[in-house]
Image 1 (cartoon, one colour):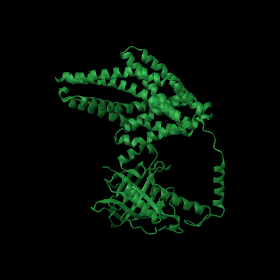
Image 2: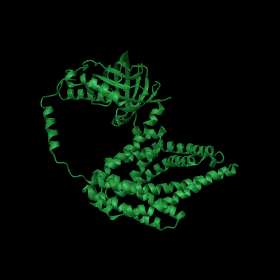
Image 3: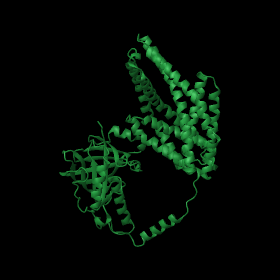
Image 4: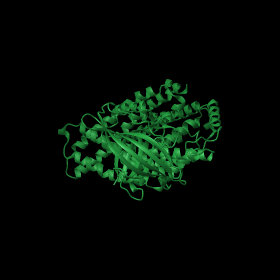
Length: 545
């Protein structure tokens, strides 16, 4: 059984002046924290002894993403701990009981990072933790301050000489939210006491940095931790740094812009995997958007990346988006139908409409959820992630890739815009009915592609690309609402049929169907003026300038 909590903490260490020459850099003494914001008293909780073994892949995939996995004994929370970054000072911490193997649920959440690599012991940390509670005037615990004296050894590859240091952790108590003012007030006291924010994000990162620094010092002729390396080494490094800093930066190229965007979408895909598995709200939607943005970039920037390489990857991304789409489409449709139902006066809700909608949605949810998890657990998905990594490691560049970015990306955005213009013309010329519904849906997809292309171009084109993307978003929203109405009407037709067969009133579902028809018609009336404003020549000129 895995428990989850949100951990909000900051880490501090002594300044170089306070730390002393080496060995274990002892703190100058924890400053007085009473009176820091709402802190009325500081209550000692004694010293705990903690032993933790940290795990990672041979290539340290977890550490690279700010993730830590450890098996810890001692203290009141011994067991397996998995920490996933959420935001500044914030991580999601999952805990599972002690056991010899990594808990299966934790291993599953790490699959998008670990893939086929083994998880092996990376470092062992022994910590003497002096714990103190910060308490307000009402006796409520606000935060815990820990003075940790750490001894760390690297286990892979091969054991190392131990590294020793002392640090302070300030962690908000559960239920305090992100009490920025309390953390800031405590930080002022700690800074005045000679401490500063730790340079490394975790004890593991600190342990590896310290043990590898010590090993490097020994190999380069130093005498071990804290002893200087051979004379002249730092001066050489400084000259190298100065030379690199003085070199002129090359102009921004098209591949810089496109590959940076692609890397960010791949990162989003991998980062959202645990959230999708954990059924976090909106996670499926955001992961699906990442797949779409990747496919769009491959198509829009085909003059930068060779489509003979990216097209097969795009096909796999389309597969993944489709598997995710079953769940996402259900979420969107359920939210829309529930909202429309809530708008109706009570006297117009005939029969058990809420219950029927609930059962209909949850019946679809089980199958959709199984589809999503099946896709994420498949070899096909892991192969896709590996293929995306290989793409950015060795990108299939075309001739335009090394050209200045601005003209190349502007041309790509405008090319997609012309495609959208053709589809909008078809949609506006098609008489109302199923054919127009299809034409509007095709225009919606084209508008989304133009928007994504413009978002990709922002580093090169700046505000003009941002404005262009915003206009495309406005068009996309109207087209999307129309398409959602088409889908909602089909669902309402099914619900009305089910209600009728069950001997229930189908009046309410029919009423909602009519309102969706009216909404779609209103959106169709908006389109000509909206598109006329969007298609003005000055907007294109703004992008080209």
